[in-house]
Image (cartoon, rainbow, N blue to C red):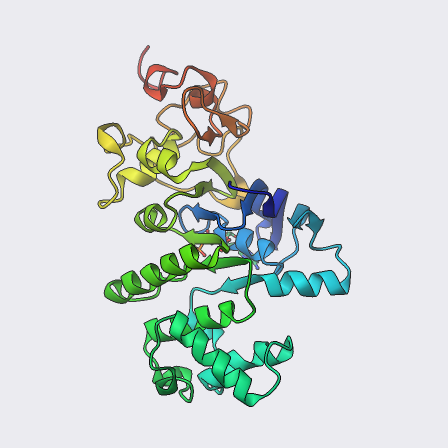
Length: 342
Ligand SMILES: Nc1ncnc2c1ncn2[C@@H]1O[C@H](COP(=O)(O)OP(=O)(O)OP(=O)(O)O)[C@@H](O)[C@H]1O
């Protein structure tokens, strides 16, 4: 991080009630992001990325732990401060069609927050500012879009309008949840480039959620990545470290499945998982929850105690793995994989 944290999640957990009992969707997650920084949350579907993002955005209250904005707990702020936080932190949803009101024109969508927060005093000012916002998201000339309804726009244009709306209040942090995953590939690249340009121009913090490691490497360049598995962060560090030199066996497995990310000859190998099934959140394995699938599994250690995130000797990132964080930096030199006969 380059400065004081803008947003911090401190030992945050979220447990939902389900028919099969408590469902611990997020467990003891500690992460932070500073102004101008990007933090990518990556992991397979169901690992808790969206739930984490919703807590960060104040859309869901953690069942344990705190979410702090500029050092203050967002769930204990007075009204005034909470209003300032809601203005400073904006959320971009995966599905712009669902997040944009179908009976509002683009102008109505963009002018509402401007008027509500007193940034535009009259219709002319709102029109001018809405036009500027559309230029920022490359919808030009703005007059071609302001009177349109969401159904008259393409998916990429709709997501650009959603981004423009998020920018309307000059946020300091943008939380984007799979913001490009519903777009066609060709359109996705354009939206991703636009978001990257905004990130560089605006000096806002970004929490960027994606299941796609190639996108995380591109958008998260120069930032940090948190890899989540079954509600926990299992690897956390600089994007370059995590993608180019992944240490947690789960991150290695994820990367080996991505054709357009090259983590080097070590990471490209078959991860040798012992199992492919992801355990249920309502019946989590004992100890390290990755142990039933892990190629580095050490019986008696990995299935008894849950590993905390710890620095990896000789590497920049932290991993939650008894084997990798326990010995001298080289995961291939440590631990005896179960069944190796050694
Ligand atoms: N409101 C809810 N009530 C009950 N269970 C929930 C709720 N929201 C999420 N879950 C469950 O919590 C777990 C984590 O979901 P979450 O959406 O955070 O994961 P994700 O990594 O973002 O996955 P995806 O990419 O599929 O959205 C899942 O098992 C999900 O079914």
